Structure formats: C-alpha cells, structure tokens
Amino acid sequence: MRFRYGSPDVVEVRDVEKPTPSDDEVLIRVIAASVNRGDLDAIIGRPRFARLFMGLRAPSSPKLGIDVAGVVESVGPGVTRFKPGDEVFGDGFKFGMCAFAEYVAVRESVLETIPAGLSMEEAATLPHSAVLALQGLRHRNGRTFGPGARVLIDGASGSVGPFAVQIAKSMGAEVTGTCRTEKVEFVRSLGADHVIDYTKVDYTRAGERYDWIVDTDSHHSILSVRRALAPNGTYVTLGGWDSAIFAGMLLGPLISRFSDRWTGLMLWWKPFHRPDVATLKELIAAGNVKPAIDRRFSLSDVAEALRYVDEGRARGKVVITM
Ligand SMILES: NC(=O)c1ccc[n+]([C@@H]2O[C@H](COP(=O)([O-])OP(=O)(O)OC[C@H]3O[C@@H](n4cnc5c(N)ncnc54)[C@H](OP(=O)(O)O)[C@@H]3O)[C@@H](O)[C@H]2O)c1
Image (cartoon, rainbow, N blue to C red; front, side, top):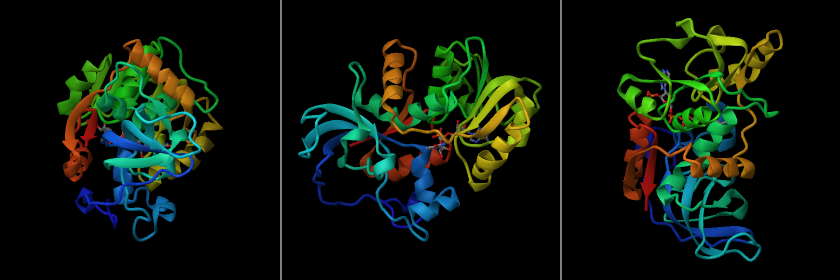
C-alpha cells in the first residue's frame, strides 16, 4: 500500500480485512503477483496528467499490484465462469490495483484459467506485460508485419520487452533488441537476432532501417525515431513521461498523415483481451514464448522488489510470492 506519491520507499505492507466477493466478483487466494512499470507509474504518479484520475495530491486508492495468479477461494452469487479451487490469472488494472496481497476480490471478467503446464509464478508474469507486447506488435485495425520484417524492440530487457522479442520472432521477424550493457546476453538468450547496447549506440543514428519499432517506455523523440523507420514502417510507443505521451498522442499521428510512416502512442490497449490471452496460451504451448523470471521476492519485501525494477536491475520479470 502507499498513501502518497513518491519512490518505492513510500510502499508499506499492512494487515487489512480479507475482502468479500460481491455479486460478480471472485475471491482469489493469491499465490503469485508480478511487478510492472505500471505499478511504479502508480507509485510515482506518472504521467503527471494521470493524477487527474489517480488522485491529484495523493493516490485515491492505496492498493497496488496489477498481475495476479492464484486459486479461487469463493465466488459471488453472479459468477458463472469460475468455482472454488480453479487456478486463475488476470490483469486487475481496469478495476483497481490490488494484486500485492494475500487475497483479492476482482470481477470474473478480468480472469482466465491458467493453462496446463504453466506455474503460478509464470502465469503471474503474463497478464499485463505479454498482452501489451502482443498488442504493440499490431495496429488498432490488426495490421502488422509479415515474416522477414525487421523489428526493433527498444527496451527489450524489462517486463514487456522479453515478451515482445519472443512474439516478434514467432511471427518470423528479424528481431533487434536494445538494453544496457549488463543485459546484452540476456536479450540474446531470448532469441533476438541482434542486440544493441543503448549506452554505446543510438539506434536512431546507426543507419539501420526497421519495419516496426516498439518502444516499451519512450526512450527517443518521435522525430528521431523516424530516421530509423523503413518506408511504410511503424513506430509504436507504449508509455513514458507526459511529454512523450503527448508527442505520441498528438504529434506522431499528425506527422503520420503526411508520411508513409506511422508513429504514435498505442491507444488500442485492451487489458487481458480474451482473444489475445488465447493467442498467448497457444504461443506458450508451442514453446514460442516462455516467461523470463529474474527474481522472486516475498510480499513482505514488495518495496524492495519495486526498487529493484525501478533501478533497472531486473532482467525480465520480478515475481512477488505470498
Ligand atoms: N499504452 C498503453 O495503453 C499502456 C498501458 C499500460 C502500460 N503502458 C506502458 O507500458 C510500458 C511498459 O514498460 P515495461 O514494463 O516493459 O518497463 P520496464 O520493465 O521498466 O522496462 C523498461 C525497458 O526500457 C529500457 N531502457 C531504460 N532506459 C533506456 C534508454 N535510455 N534507452 C533505451 N532503453 C532503455 C530498459 O532497459 P535496461 O533495463 O536494460 O536498462 C528496459 O528494457 C510502460 O511505459 C507503461 O507505462 C502502456
């Protein structure tokens, strides 16, 4: 929980009452959760304009945690898809973050059954990051790239990036990932064909051209990434600070109208969209996508886990175990 905006230092673990599921809610005994940049955004209040919705001076809700995996403990009277004992996972972003807890009550619509062969910890890494990765690799209208396309994942070593690398590879792309020096081998191990150490090379100035670029957390200006886009190429940024988001929302689409290249913010995110979850299950079953878990922290150490991710130390996902 946290009661003011700030660094992960403002996060504390408190005893609260076990929630009771209302009509369409499912009470889950949480086995694992995972850390996302979205949790850190909520802690710091980023982007700043989002505080209009999150709470102007302080967060309107103290709860934290987007990704959840666990066992159904009980269900509300209106629940039709799940029963006690079912193993479920989901993305609680839309309905209030609350996954960093021993028990959570969430609407059944944000949950899916965990596929066979996937551990609770692995399942907890998927809902937010893997769906963002999948949706960042296609336009709102479904347009995407074909086999042989040159795809760059800027920020390939965090939460979304490793999924994006693996999904793009499964689509037949030639994939380049960027990361800091210490994580080059990690990104290569995900299957990336090329890895750029962003501390040494600025890909927008390296002379290469890409058909599709996913920027996991806005590391370059919209104007500079255009240099690295091939004709008819696409640059999708997922997030960042206010200026990057406004540029992605307004400037990118505006200049795209006068160009054969598309640049902009992903505004078509559908959290834990059921058809996308089905696609991810298939990719996992086929062995094309495997969650990369860096470290596990216990719930009592959740602030340390958040700090670990915030400081850029994580290679892939960080899991919170109860
Ligand atoms: N559009 C939407 O609807 C929507 C919805 C939800 C969330 N989001 C956004 O989705 C994003 C998810 O990001 P994430 O969870 O993957 O973040 P993350 O885990 O923090 O990963 C950040 C990545 O950026 C890299 N990076 C850091 N500084 C860099 C630099 N200067 N140049 C190049 N790369 C750099 C990191 O590399 P190293 O670790 O190697 O330094 C890492 O690979 C967030 O921005 C979130 O706000 C968007």
